[in-house]
Image (cartoon, rainbow, N blue to C red; front, side, top):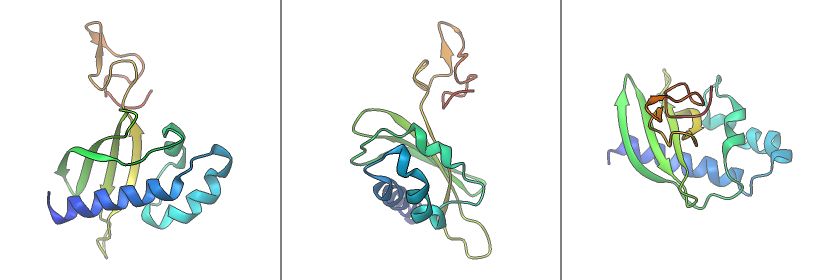
Length: 128
């Protein structure tokens, strides 16, 4: 694991840790605590897909594409997540730009019964 990958995984666990215990009624308050770790265009409704308790997130795999790290993560409840990080200029501090869950219909494959999954649109992540 590279230093940047380790930094992003540590940052993700820090963000998730600050959101726990997760209650939708306290989302705005907790969002304010972590917003400096997020990009300006981060959609805070991404947090609605999190289970009430996540103990740890493990790096399943990651890749770097045009300055974006993509982590495929799994919590104790065996749900997969896709977290994207970018390092905006000029400081190049890593920030999370999105966090979405694996599609519960196709289980991240994008295909269900030989056809493009209608829930996620074939991406394997979230829902359309």
